[in-house]
Image (cartoon, rainbow, N blue to C red; front, side, top):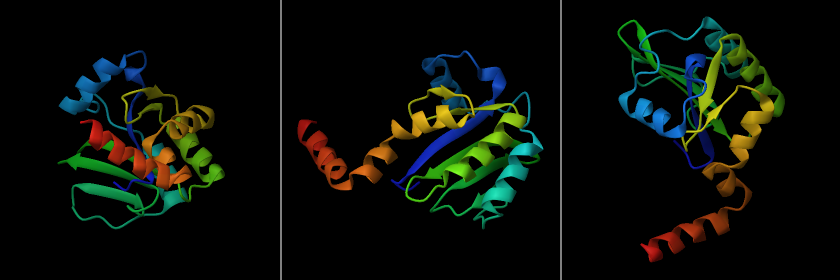
Length: 156
């Protein structure tokens, strides 16, 4: 994943109400899709907005460009085991993000950010998550962001 991308796991709406600790444990186990499978609305929205992308594996379906905004579905046999959205904060168009999130709403899924916080697939909620992300800090002020990394290294 590139530093300008904000990553979200796409999870079933049955995860609603879980705290970040519980979500973190579920992320580690990779069991979000063990009892259900994501709806086709996710794939349709991704195809319509991002287009089908190239994959490096027969177990991974990609929509969009991996260096930009993309959706990845990881399979184990015939079952989807992980769905991941990466948003390129350098170039994402608000209307495309809104259309993608509409597909997520129809599929009844939620998004989990890099801090294991759960978000409804609404433009308002996802924009808040994007603005709190590491990628946002980098894109809005790369010099300060990189300087802060070396400051963290000096403290450790």
